[in-house]
Length: 229
Ligand code: NDP
Image (cartoon, rainbow, N blue to C red; front, side, top):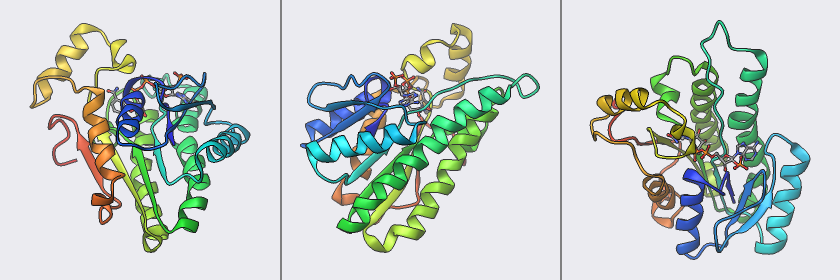
């Protein structure tokens, strides 16, 4: 199960997992999945839609063994101008939406005594970012969620990790002005933005059998931007 699987980083993750032979269900608002995956329309802020999406995925593919909670939004604003609606919207998708999917997915994982949860965090979760108090708070919270889930479910063969992308070429960053992107590039030791498939590669490893002893980790995939954070 991959949320936000229709485009950007999520689509690259879906494609990797399909290529690795997984039966993949992809959730997004419109239900348009990359080829080879089952697309299910689902707004992760709506509990009933999440329940229905899991039921549909399970009917088609069997119990959910892997959850990649990747759907995320930004509503950037300096704190004095940030509205309650901008705060609530970002927390609703990026944090509560992840919790809702993790809670539902844990049911079948506990029963199976095997599971993999990967949350798409962000370098700014631990690095901070002016104008993104809502977004960085939501992403930092995913670290606490993965670590608490690790403590709750670790003995049941379930791992929970965060992949923390740096600046990646997707629609989310395409809206940034050129001078802002140039400023970011200057701070990234790799000297470039990342590609969605570079995040997908880390996710594919974390959900594999080889990563069974990695849990509660934050794996940066950021060209070195967040070193030490
Ligand atoms: P995009 O903006 O390209 O895609 C966002 C995805 O989230 C879409 O699939 C979208 O579906 C889905 N989504 C948004 N809201 C909801 C919702 N309420 N319910 C279900 N799905 C929803 O983002 P990216 O691919 O760039 O980002 C993916 C993840 O990576 C996000 O969590 C983001 O915060 C994180 N990230 C991205 C970075 C970057 O530089 N791009 C850097 C660090 C982290 P739909 O198309 O239907 O709206």
